[in-house]
Amino acid sequence: MNVVFAVKQYISKMIEDSGPGMKVLLMDKETTGIVSMVYTQSEILQKEVYLFERIDSQNREIMKHLKAICFLRPTKENVDYLIQELRRPKYSIYFIYFSNVISKSDVKSLAEADEQEVVAEVQEFYGDYIAVNPHLFSLNILGCCQGRNWDPAQLSRTTQGLTALLLSLKKCPMIRYQLSSEAAKRLAECVKQVITKEYELFEFRRTEVPPLLLILDRCDDAITPLLNQWTYQAMVHELLGINNNRIDLSRVPGISKDLREVVLSAENDEFYANNMYLNFAEIGSNIKNLMEDFQKKKPKEQQKLESIADMKAFVENYPQFKKMSGTVSKHVTVVGELSRLVSERNLLEVSEVEQELACQNDHSSALQNVKRLLQNPKVTEFDAARLVMLYALHYERHSSNSLPGLMMDLRNKGVSEKYRKLVSALVEYGGKRVRGSDLFSPKDAVAITKQFLKGLKGVENVYTQHQPFLHETLDHLIKGKLKENLYPYLGPSTLRDRPQDIIVFVIGGATYEEALTVYNLNRTTPGVRIVLGGTTVHNTKRLFFLSLYKHVCEVS
Image (cartoon, rainbow, N blue to C red):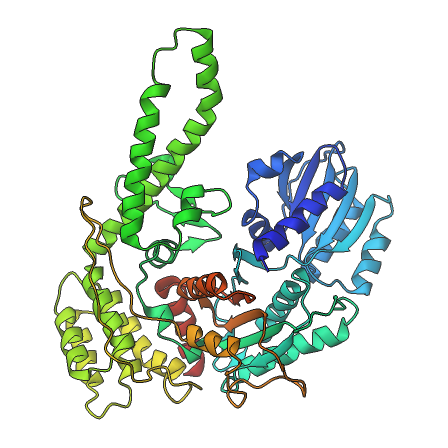
């Protein structure tokens, strides 16, 4: 089960089916993102696709020498654009692919508009989601619920995205959902309705053990999206933000023009693929090795070019050399900026207290440490609010709860009202009253070993104690111990055997820390394949706070 491969296969098939000759790829806003996650422009150019256009672009030229491959979501808006296009075709022939199920009436409307008979075929290719990593997908939806209930438009989009995912992986699953979440039950029912209605599409070869779809709600674990991260991919998203593999570095002090936006894609960047799950200290060490390797190669390329053979060797090696140069400068810049932010915001100390709040049960020590950090001028208002949020969640019903005092400390520190309001919003969103599980079960104090990496200044090798709640849930599920009274099946059937193919979907968004958990479980559990998805992939600032802010506005 590899979602990147699934989407890539669809796009390759579209291009192959259109045959030889020059082509234009006609997309909408969402499918542009879907394609860019799995293919670079240069890779598609090699397949004779020379032009990339948006269906909603008004001023496209007429180019009758090009074939058009249309990859669009089956929305009313896109169908209307296509009808206009077919009435006045700009290209010689059209191969139309919808990313999800298209209604018969829409196909009829398109056929009626195709008076010049330029449409070669209309097909459904179910790449209707963002393939982030091989085992992680997203729908790029922010704020999917109104209070505790679904926003109807987002419920529809999520149902479509999730059923497309199942079709692309050729899975017809049994469904379990989180009982404490009305939204999880509603989504489970909607997915089941589509499977029943489109039963012919879901007639795949039966496996001995049926696949399982598990639908969860973010409010059951509001801790994980609040924590600072220390593995490369998760840390980049937390501190810089990843948007469809793109990182905006324009605010980095002294950044060069060509590095203002960089792409981090495991498909096309070997260093990133090998390091995305490693911790920050190891990244620092590996960056150093990459630099040294680059320096060794550099003098050779810059030797005098005295013979034709020298020039030939240089030209042959130059593309690789140039690619390596780009990789080095990109990762050195990204890691350098992460280092700067860690130091500037005192994040090692902040993270240590976050870990204590998330994993241990010593109230007086936690309170003392939070109070101490709130007095530290290096701790930003954002990080201060985050610490108080974690305290509020963990010690919500503790007999010595000191939240009012900490709220006063936030005010005295000058933390803005919007951040202070979010503390109570978080408890409303993911507090004990809402959760179906015990997020803070008593644990032994974890012994923390701080490792120091010699020979590399400025990058500390850090630790993480926290395991996302999802780890425990999946561990129980794989062992056949996940309680049916907390995670019931939809319908009368239940799974007799332990599941092998598991698709987990988190309403309200998954995190890269959870993606790492899934990656490790896939590696260490023979015979089990897990894919994780969410309405979005969170980082604290851009996503979790936005979703939370929307939630509190609607609840109040």
